[in-house]
Length: 419
Image (cartoon, rainbow, N blue to C red):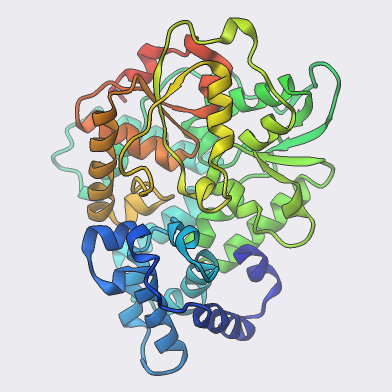
């Protein structure tokens, strides 16, 4: 429970906790085949076992400076596939974020690049209004010649999903039918700005399932972005604000896998009330209306977001819901590997993220699907970007969109490569 640790643990205690997490690793190596960076680079320091070994050496003062640990930790996706593979139950996600917050972040050398990304990730992305302004600026810049732009700016523009009209956001929906309780829906910071239609669809689905739905405006960012970046204070503040916003809700629902994983790591009873959208719908036995059934057989690839499959252990629920809709699920090779989106990873580690994206897109195209479904904004952005690069107008939709809109999703808007 990394955010829980950040809230309740003093800095001097956190190093002892970090050491305890590190020594739980037996260095058996069963995590190596599951690690995307090890598969791509083949170096021990870019495996979970290697990173833990470096951290332990630093904590036990066999290495004097964190400098040798910063780069391998930065290259880690935080996908937590190693946790699924680990027979010893090492809590690698907790270890990684605590190490970034307490060891590598304070020792990171200051540069213009690091200052830029720190400002963007901590002062812009978690704040809806600032993020909205940044997106408007990037879309405006996308209409001009990109030759003069620095690489990091071109990269942000290329990752932006196509613009499409979205319904007006709502903050409250009454339950339809017998009310089964009050569901707080986390709108988040990324989803309302980049995928507002997904949020709208999620809330409508919860209301159809019998929940009274509220989306408090003061809930904001859940703290996942800050925790992944080593910003302990920012993660703590976001977590406390989120818990206060949903105090009167029976369940708290996230449609973004990273947000759900972060909230399930909050301290106290709050974590027990958190549900992924697919969990909440299955618990309510949601069924698609007859008119929403898919008209013809669609070949669909469901891409597992890492923080849903590994972080929350949820794999079957989305597939069960898609099966109720009537689509044909198509398996792909390489489905166990991260697509390279991983929150802000595609921005911070563009070369490695590109290689992982190419691997995943190649496998998607080999399966020849009609559309791709996933449930996390970074996956949506990364896969859409990869398919546009390959000049394939293949829709990539959030799970909520296909469940709510059925076959009538706006295909032309989703398939358009234009910004």
